[in-house]
Image 1 (spheres, each protein chain N blue to C red):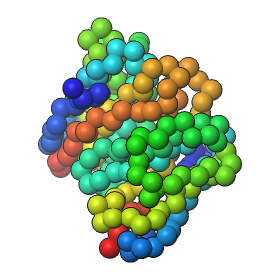
Image 2 (cartoon, chains in turn blue, cyan; image 1 turned 135 degrees about the vertical axis):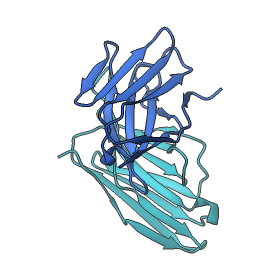
Image 3 (cartoon, chains in turn yellow, red; image 1 turned 30 degrees about the vertical axis):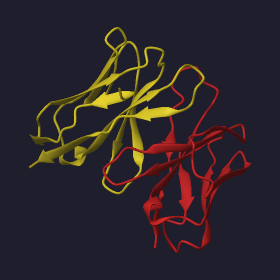
Image 4 (tube, each protein chain N blue to C red; image 1 turned 45 degrees about the vertical axis):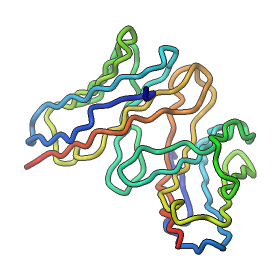
Amino acid sequence: RKEVEQDPGPFNVPEGATVAFNCTYSNSASQSFFWYRQDCRKEPKLLMSVYSSGNEDGRFTAQLNRASQYISLLIRDSKLSDSATYLCVVNGQTGANNLFFGTGTRLTVIP
Amino acid sequence: DTEVTQTPKHLVMGMTNKKSLKCEQHMGHRAMYWYKQKAKKPPELMFVYSYEKLSINESVPSRFSPECPNSSLLNLHLHALQPEDSALYLCASSPLDRVEGNEQYFGPGTRLTVT
């Protein structure tokens, strides 16, 4: 079983739509959770960390459900510039600094 | 300054060449990483340095040799590579002084082609 599994996508949505990505992780001892975005032929950029209480940054909302080992990312009012691959990333146990990456979900926002 | 820099941006090398990739960060981070990424795949961890000491080597072939001269610099020495080693090589850094978080920040990568 993979450490991190994501919706494979691709997601093609119109501008202004709301889109949600889901991710599950296998290691119940994982402590840190992140969403990164990666544009074509560029490096991954940290979008947001995911905290137990859930967190919001503008149009982006991340949720964590430890009991179900499930992470989500909601994007409201999609912009053309949101088109990218979104990577769900999970750290190992506390103190371990190796990250496990999901395979990514490709989002295309259509005019 | 939240930037990780990498040089060169692009590198083409023959299978008998020796070359080095360089990475630098000035965020005071004490962990640095090398990843390899093939097209349409997620990054794969190669090496982790914590406090300038190699802490993780993900069974990487010896033709890749990492070096951490100081807390700001990370090198990857390449020798006798194979065409299948062609990929984007990403450097990242993270602070080590947090229990949670410890976000990694990536450099722009070196796109390597082995001929």
